[in-house]
Image (cartoon, rainbow, N blue to C red):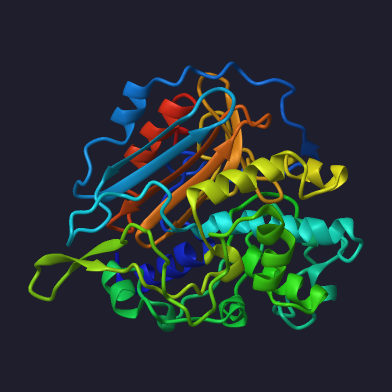
Amino acid sequence: MNRSARRTRWITLAVCGTLTMTLAGGMAAPALAVSRPAVTSAPAAATAPLPRLDPAVLRAAVAGLPDEDVTGALLRITGRAGHWSGTSGVGDLETGDGVPPNAFIRIGSISKVFTATIVLQLAAEHRIDLDRPVQQYLPGVLPSGLPPVAVGRLLNHTSGLPRGGSNPEFGDGSPEWFAAHRLKSFTPRRVIDTLAGQPMQFAPGTAQQYNGMNYFVAGLLIERVTGRTFADEVLTRITRPLGLRGTYVPDADDPRLPGPHSHGYLTVQSQDGATHRVDVTEQSPWPWAEGGMISTPADLDRFVTALFSGRLLPKAQQARLFEVPDVPSSHSSQCRTQADAGRACMTMGLMRVTAANGVVVWGKTGSRPGWTSGVFATKDLSRKIVYSVDPTNLNGTEMALIQRIAAASFGPLVPAKN
């Protein structure tokens, strides 16, 4: 891959919060199908019976660490259908200490669920109209040549917004660049400015494509409507009421990760061709409302329980959490299981995943260099899982481990065919 292509890929992956592939599969997304009206499809009334939790299978799913691609992993399973938790590997290569079971983690794009929840709360308060163009709330933020984009289309990734153009200040997509520039920060407006001169991916509402740009815009929308920072809104609306003491939006200039935590590492290549691992635990939280938050497994469990139980949203907005637009998936980094069959799988904040045995779960994945995490649950909360693994590259090679975790927790996933 040439340098220009790598740089474009870095911006795409970093801004979209998909530095690695997700729980939903590991093969190329199908091509865009013929569009149809964007009506929503309700989830199935019932899901298949959950498989029994087998401690031996669960232990095997996370076993064998550290290896070349992953240093450590943790898995927490709760719900009335059974509990299990375990860790594997090491959290600190220097000391050899294990992975803390309730480690602070960089949750990446799981941050989007918090962002979407706040926008839906503002919609319930009649301070935001989900069908109104975001340009009316944020004049001058998006490039002037783009068509009107409804607020709700940001949340469910049917906006069609560009992914952003190539810019050398965002790096070349390599572990070496990130390791050397991990403290570098970008403001949300600077990220959105990379849209200038870029074409729309598709007409708004005609397809779905996972795009972190949607959530940078949504974060600015929250701040414009409320007159407060995104961090303040997360605190007052979600984390403080739920008692999530380990969940927060870091300050833009705060690269620290509280303890206990596993260290994040990247394998980098020196000029002489030798490889070594660089500790990237401290890094800029610039992805912000799109992917910059910090949390813990216990907090994420409590958050998804409150969200699915209706504690955070009124009934009308709660329904939007489980409405999947009936549109094609357009070259998306999500919606890659055979069950999706080239169609959308994301809602206003969540994604739907259907296992081969018919079990349907809802949740979100997230990645930052050194971390790949996920929180998923059945709609009735009978089974909830939180996982976090510590990959040492940006290539998604930890997917085999995540597929094992998914299969042991809910049932095997079948990747979509090319």
